[in-house]
Length: 146
Image (cartoon, rainbow, N blue to C red; front, side, top):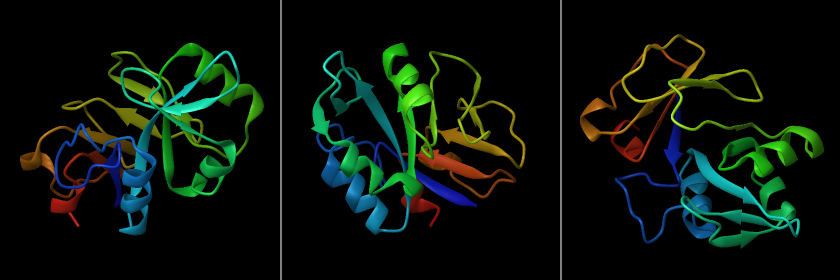
């Protein structure tokens, strides 16, 4: 089962470091995939950040980590950019949906929802990070699973 560090968090939420390039690189170096929150602005710049564009990154930085990233497009502009002008990235868009399908055809489920062997199961508590018959777990607490 694949383990995905939610916003780069491994041992619990950390609002000061999550979604920073350094936190993402650290989680990848520790052997995790990472779910990142991505923004693409009207000037063609890429940004990391949960509620708003916060940390500017380059396409070059993103491409170097492509195989480890699960890109949560935070708005329609970003989703459109990834769906029309990129290849090979694993990205998705949702706003409160129980499920969404990633660009690589994995089912991304919200916490507490049903899952299959092809599902990335979003887990929001440390107590719920046990082994499941799913493709991956995405959590702030993936360190407790590994």
